[in-house]
Amino acid sequence: MISDESFPKREHLLKSKEFSRVYKKGFSARALGVILYCLANGLEHNRLGFSIGSGNIKRATSRNRMRRLFREVYRKNKDSLKKGSDIVLVIKKDMCRDLTYDSAKATFLKLAKDVRLTV
Image (cartoon, rainbow, N blue to C red; front, side, top):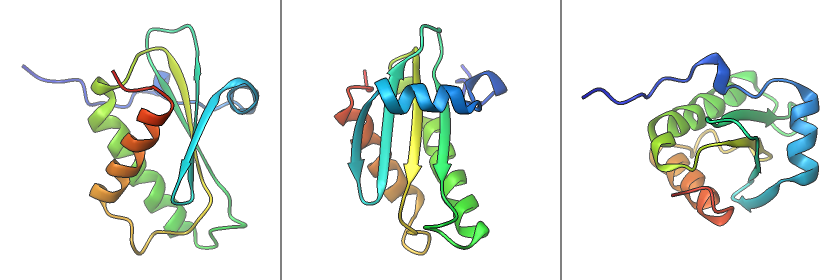
């Protein structure tokens, strides 16, 4: 049996109006310079978006690496998350040097548990 570990376009949160709605009405949790916002979206799948400001994290390579790691964590663990939520990860602190897959996974799952996103 092959699990669905893809990250199709329908699972991307892209529009700023959608981001604003999640910020205003969603639940949030923070840890280690990462904030996770979560809000029900009425769909049968989750959507994930990132907000990583260049003011806090100067190097684009660092921003992209953190985005890739957290996207991979989401992709590998999305079966353990409740369906039908918009998720926004805001990364405020440059932790690129210290960030590994395992630390990103631990941070993401802790935040998901805090906003009651895990099954």
